[in-house]
Length: 426
Image 1: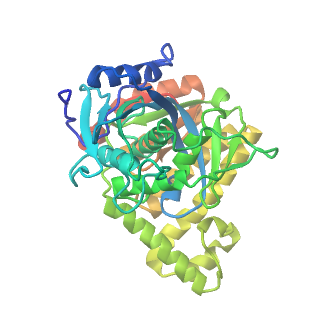
Image 2 (image 1 turned 60 degrees about the vertical axis):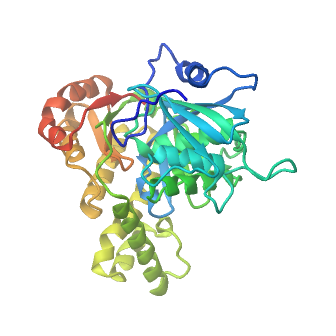
């Protein structure tokens, strides 16, 4: 096998986002990488490209079902694969440091210390020993999944782990012809995921990363990049393209710290546990049948908080108000209220910071810088996803001015976090 260039960090391997002058880079590079590492073969190479997404307001759905608003990225993941007669699959990822290669077999799973993307690929190819891999069914010819040669090329930053793993899992499943392609919509514009594959992909990501994971990014990536934003209900698996001029009228940027926020899987599991506990208590104390915080009306919030122990009130307040903000955000986008969009982002960040203690010092300092420029056309910002990336929006020239000053403004916080700041344009 090709000599691997082992990654030097726990980040998933990736290449920098292709420029707008080379939109087909991943599509062209993945099959070339496959043959460069593993040689040519007579079998047909199949491939799939899936766009990444940016959480506008979606991180709360990792802990309890609810509404999520996401934005498609220009960056994507491309997976190329071909069947193999070998007993193990060969995997290669494009990476800045050089190709990262590994092998994975039904009887040779990666160890507990293997990178999470390797564990995820093994699960997608072979299952977990108890369940079949997502989308694969035994046939008359074989009761074991086939082996493959697989190449992955990604423009999604490895530090953006939630969108990275969602796009990777869906691209692998589509390249293996185990997942549905992009859906159509009915007359109302609303679609629903009717396949069991996406929930199974979500479960595989949870197993590989050892932290609770929402299906929102998977559904939004499945929906594709045809609309400026996608509204997702993670309880019903319904999704709706949000038609708005917000992508043209406003400038958007994601500030990438170059590494994920230092939150342990245990921290995320504890948040979900507290959310589940709060729902159970509310069902016993007057909120009969309540299964999700998205069903708690804002007018009932104080009544709900009065029925909870003090330690569960902050997470309940965050999850209820964040679901309401998603709905307000969609309404603001549709009526062209750009300043309200920025205000909702700032409120989202403040709630995450004050009620969940889930932000980073670096993100907090960026938001402080944004708030100081709201009168100059920078409308708002929030920490997006769970990995410390920051979504910023405003008038084009004002946003450029902010991004020029951010490295100096947050230099101490960036140094303390070991951040290597990059700016991405969704």
